[in-house]
Length: 398
Image 1 (cartoon, rainbow, N blue to C red):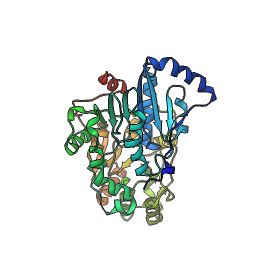
Image 2 (cartoon, one colour):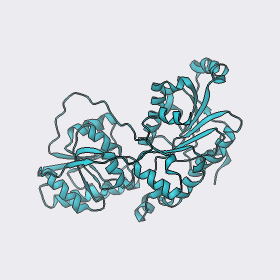
Image 3 (cartoon, rainbow, N blue to C red):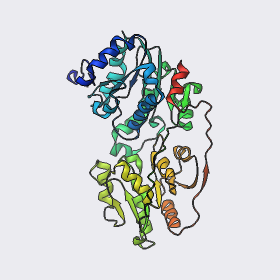
């Protein structure tokens, strides 16, 4: 149940004394001529989804759209967005992640009340929902393909929310989705699946693939010795760390364990899943449970490692795949639709069944023996409704 004390009457506005005067001038002047665009992303606070919000903000600034429209951003934590303080009006809803019910209150009750007496030209929901709002136009960005995920016992054991949501997300997504002018997803297969499961017009689903180009340092970094397999990820049970551990265990029984090492970015302190993984496999000496790494360290490991393994069973994109491509790193990835799309065109990849530890162990052995397992992938995008920038999407509305 929702505790009334958990619901603030007004959002917290990100405005300090330095900006108060300029914000007041905007209210009295420019807002009379600018169209208002509201962006809600109150569930985004870390990882790839937060980066999508950042990328949105950066692109709006770089394209100059912040000068053409008045942007109001709803966020979970204002300190995560302080660098955008000079460009947008930022409103904080700090209790939005306290529970799923609180978030639903904001999405379907609070935002409707907030928008009722405001002249909002466009409302962009940037986190897996179609809130009930009063706006001339509405767009929703869907990160999460959970509506197509078949949950099992492990989901119930480690994350009951994912287990439950895999059954109800279809109906949550379907609720009010047709209020949108367009829905945005990152991959073709999500667009096809969403259209079928939600009975939503495929022509109104825009595929916008994330731009994951990164600036690489030119300094040469020597490869680690021995041969190093690397999997950078936060701890989520669907990330499938255990398949790498099982494959390593199998391979250690066949060859000298000192011939290779595996680096995994969990250390057992993150959650029950990570604790179980480290407890079960922590005695395997050539697995380094190094814990979460800063992004610059992850980039260094792409340079120093010999091969990326990416076994995740549920992804919108699979960011490390794109990042590893930037460093020309060979990769062994899950044979799933998201992975094929993320890999795209690349000549150093092979795919494996993410439930088959023996197959993964065999591929790891062949990689160590320098057998030609890495082939060229050539995924061809099939969507007829693609956009590459937020500017393109907003111009579709105009």
